[in-house]
Structure formats: C-alpha cells, structure tokens
Image (cartoon, rainbow, N blue to C red; front, side, top):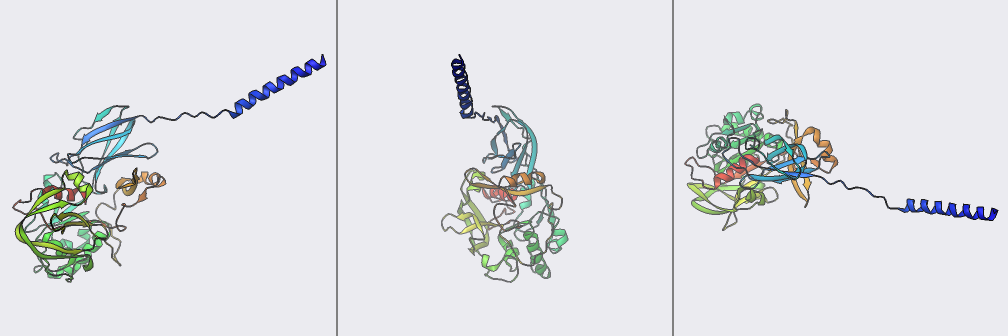
Length: 392
C-alpha cells in the first residue's frame, strides 16, 4: 500500500512539473497597436485667395511628435494622411519663418476631411520692405498676392535700426542711384552684411546686383569695390542683350512648385546684368539659359563674415517658433518652423535646430538677372518671382 501511495505521489509531481514547464516555455504574445488614420485635403492659396501656392509644406505630429508631411502640388492641392484625432496642422513655405499658417482640424478614421479655402490661406509672418526702383516693381507682385510691404529708401538701408525691423528686403532694379547717395554705400554694405548674417533675407534684381558685389548703378567689371558678397563668389557684367531667351528651371523643388521646367524670359530692356562667373559651392542655380547653361537666377544661404555683431532681425526677438531640420523617410530633409515647446521632443527623435543647409544664422540672398519690368512684359517669370517672395 505504501508502495502504491509513493507511485501516486511521484506521478502527481511529474504531472505538475510538466505543466509548469509548458507554461514557462510558451512564447509571449503581444498585441501590435494599429494606428488609425484619415486624410485631410485642401488647396493652399495666397492671403487674398488669388493664387494657388505650390511646394508648400503641410504637416502635423502625433502625440509622440512623429511627423506626417506632404507638399502641395503646382495647383496648391494637397492630401495629408495623419493619425485620427484633433490635430494642429501647419502650412508653410520656405523654412516657415516668414510665411506660415496654423489651424486645428479633426482627422477621422478612414475618411477624407476637406479643409476650406479660408483655413488653408498662407499667412504673412514676415515684415517686408522694398526700395523703389526704376525698372522693377516687385511690390506689385507682393500686393497682388494679398501681402504687405513697406517702402523704404537708401537712407533707411544706411540705418541699421530701421533695417533690422524687417525680415525681407526687396531691392528693385534701378533703386541704387549711386551718384545721389554715394556717401551712404559703405554704411549700406556693412548693414546688409549684418542683416543677412543674422537671418535677414534679400532679393536683388538685374542692376541691383551692385548692392551685392559693388560698383555704381550697375556693374561692368569683376572685383569692383563695395558690396558685401566676396568678389570671388560672383561676377556680373552689364552685357546682356534684349530679346526672348529660352530658359530651364534647374531645381526639382521649384519645378514641382511651378508645374513646368522651361519658359521664355523676355529681356525687354536694352541691356541687363549677365552672370559671368559664380562659385557653385556658394550659389545654387535655380534658372539657367537653355542653350548656354549660363545662370539666370541664383540663391544662397551661405553668407558668413567675421566681426559681424549679433543683431536681432525682424520678428526674431518675438517669435515663439524655431526652425528645425527633420529627416523624412527616403533620407529627405526638410526645414520647417515649429513651436518652441516641440523642439526638445523633435531633437530627441533626431531633428537638429536650424535649417538643413547653409551657414549658421544666414538668411537667403536671391539674385535674378530678370525682373518684373514696369511695363509688365515678364510672362512666366512672374510665377517664379511669386515663388521667390514666398520662399525667402
């Protein structure tokens, strides 16, 4: 009897051990969370609703600050896929520091919610100024989009306190008037260097390349005295001839925003500033001559100079947004502006503070050999200038 009891107890222990072993070796089962998403659609328009804006960044974040991003097409249309829920949606051009819109929207599971035109208008954040020219009126294009710009003078350019109030300065062709303001230009050169080095952006057209590289009302030689861009970076001579010139858009982002990559530019004046040479590591060519590959439109954010004082520019002292560089899938980098509270979380995910390219703190310099001549004979160049305005 004792032997039978012993066998019974032994079998019972083996049975319990076998059950425990089975339980311990079973694989752990974890449920994967499926993110529910929906879509937001809309059309990015200028402030007054007159112009579709191509190439605008449209994005939002989830609760862990993962970005959901898309671009508007050449007609301003976009479809943004994002997680379900109440979202803050950002619409920006350039790096978002000068033109941006911030709206609230509800993303619904497996549905497309259409945003209204009043929600998707691109707002002006920047303070914009222009110097009146003789052959150019870019302020007309600014106003046609529903944005505002303040007229200033060369005397204002010579006053750093006045200049520093603005984020963007447009230098219209023929505004230099060197003979009337000759004593001002050394100060203007210094101030423009301070302005750009601290994040201000400049657009100069045709003859007003002299603000960049020196010379009088226009330039006829390389290495002239004056200006603030190093002579080795750019040379332009007033040797271009009038006529219709076939041109090619040389930038993928600009092509996508415009919806075309070739155009005819009407150089309807007797002569214009032809780019003779430039430093390709300093300048990016946006538009070129289709037959000769000569540069017709350049931009850079590589400006640096020693001894430049730190000077708050435009909205910088009061902004609650910071520019960051985020890398999307496919190793695509985008520069956007985000609320300062989001910056630590984005940095923890791999973002870096500042734009994705360019010298630290530098604003943009755009130079076009063409412009919107007061007679209005500009053709498709007009939409390129709209792009310039919105991406400075």
